[in-house]
Amino acid sequence: MTPRLLATVLLFLGATAASAAPLPKDAVFVEAFAETAFGSEIPGLFGGGAYLKRFAGPIRFAVEDGASQPRRREAEGFLRRLARDLPGPGARLARGREAANFTVHIVDSKDYQAVGRRIYGNPFLRVPGACIVRSSFGRGGIRRSDALIVSDMGDELFRRCLSEEVVQGLGLLEDTDRLPDSVLNGASAAEQPMRSDRILLEMLYDPRLSPGMSLDDARPLLGEIVEDARRKTR
Image (tube, rainbow, N blue to C red; front, side):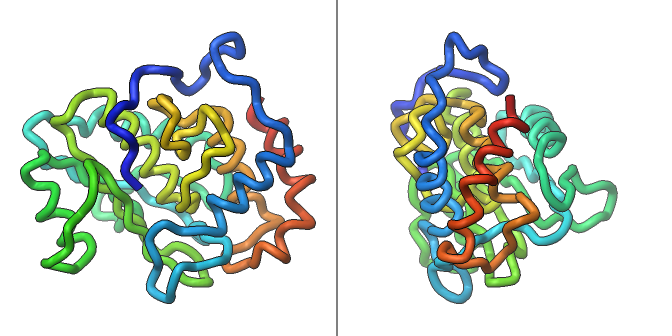
């Protein structure tokens, strides 16, 4: 997904309640979760995947920074902070020669198409926008994600792209306009994952849900799950 280039500075992780928009009601979160966790803008190996998608095992992040304006330190700092609070099977930066299953590729705009075609394995693909994430998934869960982000089109766009594509690559693979300040809302100006996004991630990796679960099976559980997620992200 490519965020709108009109994105401007708004809120950062941990913003005060006074500056943040009020949280929507639980029912709105349930529908936003249904859209983002059970949909997919880009189909997986076996179709669009109208089922819950998330990593089933440990998440190991890596950053490949080939940009003339290096951003590795910023990206790794963001991933460490996100991994620290991410529920589920455990997430951290890969160490040494440890294999990563979620790679953030940072490139100059002139290299965006070439690297995107390599990630997708398609030499004829026209990669849209200035950032995108590809997740390979099936009913057993997400096997790997690759986020591709342009470095040389401004700080605001980079931060917005980094936040949005990583959140989506964790399994919230569709947009939603139900949550005003979410990085998954194309009209939002948020540059960092907001409390709304953290609630959705808490829901996504709740142990009462599992990869491959249908929305019909999950829906009876979502009311209680969103209540618990709100409490955990205060």
